[in-house]
Length: 500
Image (tube, rainbow, N blue to C red):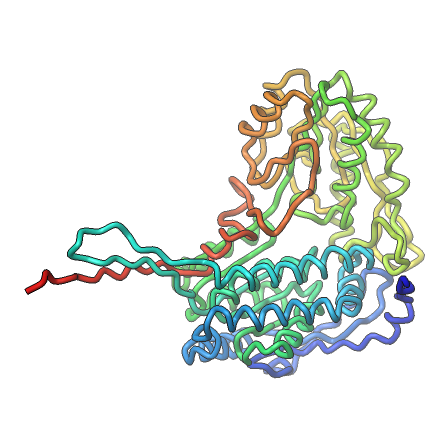
């Protein structure tokens, strides 16, 4: 018998939130008692007063994390023991799936059923996958003469600072937490001030699952206060950052100004979606790009915001894209059937509308959308927007918008498509649509991007790395490669004396 759909509005009225930090296993107010108000972008309702973490709070969290690491309460446990706790953590996430999905939707505006299916489910799978991986990673013995034994071992780094964005709060946190915790590190997580609620709840669930106090700490607050303090802290061994390229530059600067901590940046994108005239199902390509660019309100670093379509099929493609947009008109995220929800806050609304104005002023033509929607709700909604007659030098084609705005550019030849697609400071993802096998391989090899999709977009799994070329960042989240970011390699060279 199918379980009835939740009454999300009733649940939202009953939700209880605790905005205090979580340090050393305890919920605590900010040292100076400061808070900031967190309102929902859905309708402006007040969700909670959130602890405004600053340097003193970060310092307390780092000291807690360092103490936990030094006494080996977590790092010293056998890999199988850590696996058991992390598996329990994943189970706790799934058991609280409706609560977490509701918090995610209220906090940053995404449709609640998408938060339930993708964000909560994906986060639990991430934690469970790294739990299963940790006791299956072997160290190495190097080839040496008979007079030596050389061991190559992975060791946890120590204290990891994780700074995550507001667009996928749970999922981005889990991508850092999974490998960092599995490897035996302690973590201080700084969620975005725009979406701190699920991070705080996740930390409580981790404690319930058996993670020792001090191993996973959460300090909410503003980036220029708590985030900067964490990145500058002399006792943090590495920073895992996901966010804008602008702030990613600061992370590198903070490392240079402090202890030269490792910095792993997963930054912005302006991903190219290249459609050739030899691809037979133009409607499928159009439906895919619409579903991808308008998913999560376009607030995705890997959103395919630049479409390059061959001039022979451009008109057909555009007609199909336009016919898709009505299903992505913004709706109440708590309805349970919205395909697009609210932008995260008023600042992001103004940013997106500013880019739409810039596109029009630079000569691009609006095919559809371009306006604010649902103003009567008090929330921050924008119509699905498609620009045509775009050139690759326009602002809307160069800069990351982080909203439901698609730019379409026509091309004539394969060489032109590759040149235009690579003409970007970013290199996160790309997509090639062609029924010619050689062309698909040829173009995929030529595109400077961390992930290249062929005849699809957004098909993905925790088993493959995620990250980009150029100013889209360094290092990789997900897959076994993520362990490289949170472990140190140690060589132990042992002399073996000859038999006397």
